[in-house]
Length: 216
Image 1 (spheres, rainbow, N blue to C red):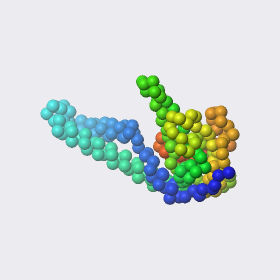
Image 2 (cartoon, one colour):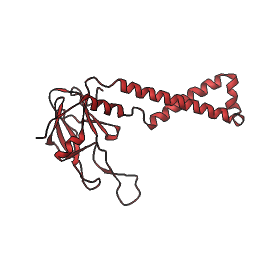
Image 3 (tube, rainbow, N blue to C red):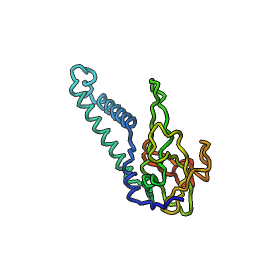
Image 4 (tube, rainbow, N blue to C red):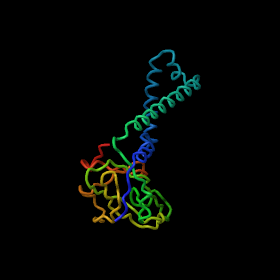
């Protein structure tokens, strides 16, 4: 049996604040939406409509409009970040997964795998290490299965990830050992599959009441 590790609110807060609610694609869509609104407004005003009706003569104004639109999109994106940080789930705590490495396991967000877009013969290996386990305290003992590699192993040389079982009791977590089911099938409701965010950097465990969809 592994040692118990106490979940701490400050660790959970640091990880929650580190999540990025707005990614590159979302930012691009946000800019496109703001640009569409800006164009509609500009075309509705006769004076500014000349920017697009005679674009060759108003390139500077168009660039200024694009710059203002980008700034507005960035402000809206930052507002989403502030909203995300202000709405951390009540009671959420975190445990740094590096604490499990002395027990021989490096918790990750999934298997290493080859890049199918790689044209070379050599495989391209990808790894998604998990830095923090985020969860709400459990009133009783609760088990979850997560992926792990042997601690200290090298990417590309460690084969398939094993599923290990973590036991959550109150605000404490400990590593029990290899999960009973290593067939690669979906976890059973007794051992709900953990939910991964930020490309596996943070592991957000759904509430036990709904293992299929997180209520966070």
